[in-house]
Image (cartoon, rainbow, N blue to C red; front, side, top):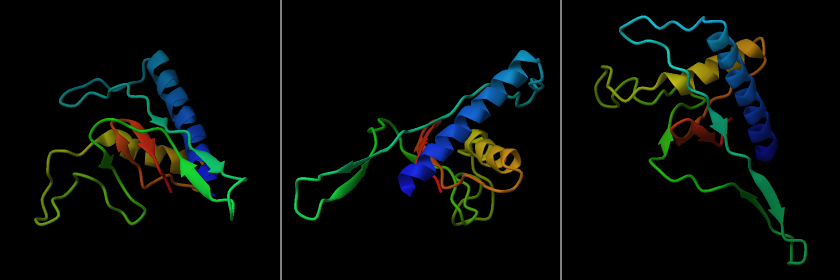
Length: 131
């Protein structure tokens, strides 16, 4: 089931990137200050399921490529958003990123409320293990 979920999230990421390219081509990006929109495509790792059929009990493993860099959890399915608020003080902090949150929002909007892709984590805009 995890492999299917991640494959569906990758397909949604491709739709998100396609929409970004369309908006860029139509000159509809908001480039006003103080924080102009940036063109940031995303990607989702492609997992695979490996089953050792010649071993006792045929063990199965969920595998994906190693991601080098600073691994970060961007949001979760309980409402957590990385960097939005300090865990100890109820005030904003500075490491908040819009791209993962924009993708989660896009998935809900694009699916007409049928799905929302959250629990995003990874390095930069390369995500893995969504819910």
